[in-house]
Length: 225
Length: 259
Image 1 (cartoon, one colour):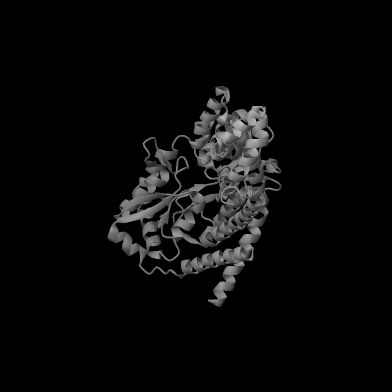
Image 2 (cartoon, rainbow over the protein chains, first blue to last red):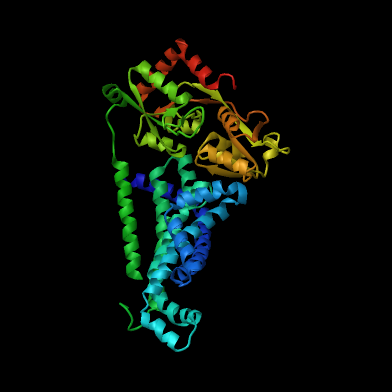
């Protein structure tokens, strides 16, 4: 048992050393994709609740289409399908696919946050002479923010995990590096154990960060907080 | 925070416990006896490799390897049951007893030989360089220095590409992805088994093979290390298959004319 355990630890260490250089790529994909998805998602969410049909109808179609197609298929479509026309490299195609996919989910979260605000708040703002843009900017969104925060951090963690799908177009991030290692040395259990552990470590940090933000932005006397 | 850390460590311990379990399993039953009893030989293959193993329009497995394996199983008086798996997971799948043999245009290499046993070679091949038709600068392996090369994950093509100085190697799950990427202009060359590259180029057009072959390789059927009876049986079947002239007929069927 002792000897096996030491050998096993050594293998795990070797795998870790092999995988560590691939971690920055996973982080890069996640951060970039999530930043784009947030910006796009905010726009999609606002369009969804817009009384103007020019915004609300296309954004509804956008959400339905994007949400209805698996991310992996979107990645293949953007990289291989549009590859000939747009000539995107793996990184750009991967980040674009993840951004677009998550913007649809985030758009729905933004919408749910806005719709959770009581109608009286809109009416009060309007009666004070605020424009719709001012109402959103100064009254609705600041109140919606703490409501959507848990869902948004949930999507952030999901983005990190789903960045692994980009490995399928050959981009060398954490999961890809894992496949490279085990296809070379055939140690399946240990490889996926370490890969899983690294993801767990990263999502753990994100979860803590999310809890901290939720405490930080909690509105006293409001909701469950 | 302290509490969370403890929780995290507890999770790690649970994982380690599972790790111990996975090592503890021992399989004692003789594979060949079971194959004869059930009259089925389960064979792992990556059905994304034109000529050797692909699926036809109706979803049936077709290819040289498939016909050969069916023929060999007939010699042994059993039926072949194919299990389709990605190539980079094909040896682990054999070890985990998802199937009992591999036929997947697999080159016999010393490294793979450490994990599995190979039969006698059943096909001779080599690695070739494919480029876009209009490519003028790449004429052989020496022109690939510093270039972007597409390969399939865990193949001998990948091993050859990694030997090239300063080359950026992009590994795909199946070889058709690599050729698509070559055609799209994202990689400069694809290194892959010559008969398959030829076949793909004849289907997809717009690409060509340049320079001499990088390697001479032979394909073998793989079985688990401990299954020596099965290995002997397959080798015997291969021999009699060749003696009866069936092998030549297969070669003619799949590679005739175009070679």
